Image (cartoon, rainbow, N blue to C red):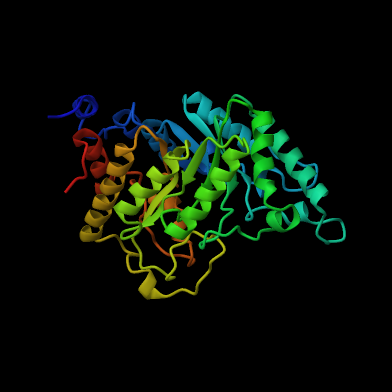
Length: 376
């Protein structure tokens, strides 16, 4: 017998279909009451230059993340110099369309300018200097958007694949407590904001155990971590559905919520044997690793659709814990996967094609909401 939420979702789908055959149903409406559905948006979409992308964002999503606008190298490129132009427009965009606005990211080993870690002679600074720079950055950025940005990715990718702490310059200069201090200062700057620890490949047991231990330790210290972000950079075969289910359940037992923060599914042959989203990777071009440059075969479209359906069925199962599902990009043409880890590849990891049209994967995700189970 269908449950109440599937009846409501089906009703929304019928209304959408009645509005016209050319109007796709809306993800944000279909999953209303379950979790928010969003996308990362780029500068052209923030500023209105990409009107086609904006139309998809406005019709489909009720939460947004900035792909690059709030990263340290862009918002705080030089000592004492902040560039709030694009970030201000980003927040205004979200407010205009009544969206939950996400801040990404305060502390990361990547896309942070070298000056943050160096003195005027190029030597590494001491612990107290770096702590002050971190404190001032968080207070300035989070404080500017207090009450407007609703959740922050406070610390990004602090754990290695084997579960040990990443030996970033944050770790080497300050020590492990840089994480606790970042969360504490973000909370001081905006006590109402949701604060997220964000990472990839947490479905792999060793890394998951390392992050579970980190979150448990932080919570025992009273550090205000509210949410763990599973980035969700997946492939057609990884992670297993069982691993996704296990991972969400494991973090829920710690008393934190889970957000799917950077969802996409790679359909291309992997350039590395390791499941990773390390942005520093760079491999030489190889035609064998770019097989769909003229278009995605129907058979692979179907695989992608089933894969998305299977994952969304897990998210739906855990809707009491999962707060949002955010795709990392709006259309296939926007995706970082076109250039990672090999420049110039043609990738198809999202629900909307390069023309902003819904793919079979979009239909499959809609069916999960209306049927409450994966599409066949």
